[in-house]
Image 1 (cartoon, rainbow, N blue to C red):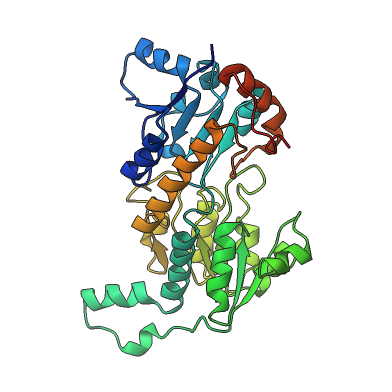
Image 2 (cartoon, rainbow, N blue to C red):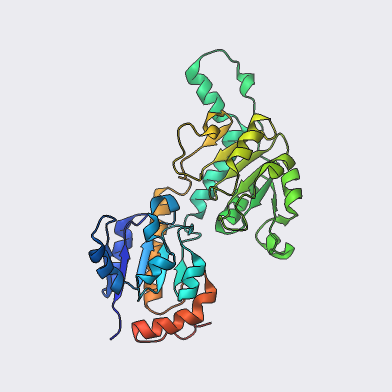
Length: 353
């Protein structure tokens, strides 16, 4: 007998009511909210029938036991897909999913405008010393306005690492200020970079020429620790480092050292290895560090888009369509076989490639 369309979840990021509304409109999709403290036999009863698993992508928001790894997948014999609420998917072991024939999907691009706006705001605030002047205004009057003179961002050079939806949106915003846009990627061609609005250069050249270095990449084996002491040393002493990617792409201790020694002018940090960071985190003691709690994408507009994107993609998946934001496309042949065996009908024509 074919499995029913059953999705399980612990938490859904975004506007939950909108997510549920779209799912409910289908009439044949069942959703079950689980609790972390449910008895194991009750959880297992749900895992036995689940074909879908909706999770938050932030690794600090999900207990390890319920992350998308080999051991968890083994508990879910009918699992076809795991979906994260946002762009991040570091809580999922993509290789384990691919091996098991489980599709991994995210909501990349649904929050691009909000995150890109946040990165641009960080750049502007750092360049104009807004955080420093705000603190001084509240603290005392032992300063003059000239102490907080800043720089225009217009006409400056920004190096954007990560030319996905967020990076391309940030490129569009920066071009409105007449900025030169650089990017670097080992597998991106100059033609494709130009199509996305950027000039492709070697990584070291990007670091040396940029007035702002903005990170909008996921953390993976290739990007982890990319911004270390060597990278910061190649930047201009007047340059700012801004990250809305993921904690761990930059090395905290090396960034602290670069700030202490004046190797770079300041930093905007929205992502951390531990979130929120401890109150005594060394980066929080610098006036020229603009710190935010991984909330670049947290706007009501973004939440609405994320909920709509998540729910609509589940409808597509459970109808046998190839999802538009498939993280592991190489899974498709194995997935298609499992889909037919579990759901009782093949994936849709035109979606098997």
